[in-house]
Image (cartoon, rainbow, N blue to C red):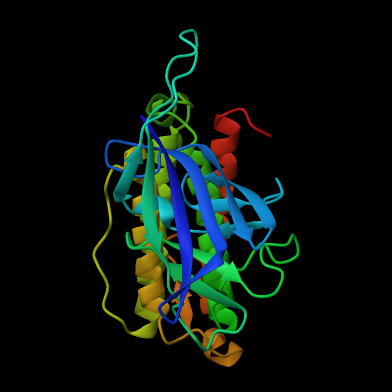
Length: 298
């Protein structure tokens, strides 16, 4: 694995802001993506440094406390190497340092009307967030963009629940993922982490289909695929995107409108719109807990 130093700069109206800098030391895999794991970096603004840990290429943690974090997609796009410099060898006992590569990353302000945050865009398509005022202070480290309306709030929580599950899956091996955990259960969905995850994703599509039926929207047929560990995060995201498409334009659905949508589930009970959506969120949480128990975690 090659170790690189990624440097990003902020650009405003086509001009560089040299006082603001993003720097990350990390490993790149064979696809030129940031390798899984935890990597150290910092944000420099004038003479102030804000150190962070980048975890699995999708979250920057600033204080060792999960609430003080920011989501980023920097790990989803390949890095383009612009310049290389030779490394300085270490002692033979420790081996050489991998060649340092400087990946040029250019950022621009995406939305001039945004007052609180602006999104910097990398040439690779990745982004980091730049907060206004005392950037990346503990009070402002989490700069999440929330959806509008009561339905938007439910979708935000659905994504958060799925994100917690995703972080667990990223940290386990393929062997742990497919290992049969319960040999006595009569429920085929609960034999291994793989069967649980496959069930969660299939159920997520099922909830979306029921919501679509209540809204008079066309839907896909029954989703039924075995999900491997490397594909689990992407399949979860696809399910969430399908749910988002279902709800697009309906984030401000009123309580009266939600109550009027009566949905009969495949397992018997009748739910209104909000009850079914809440059921979908808790379903992910319950199975995340089940997986944690499989792994012997508290």
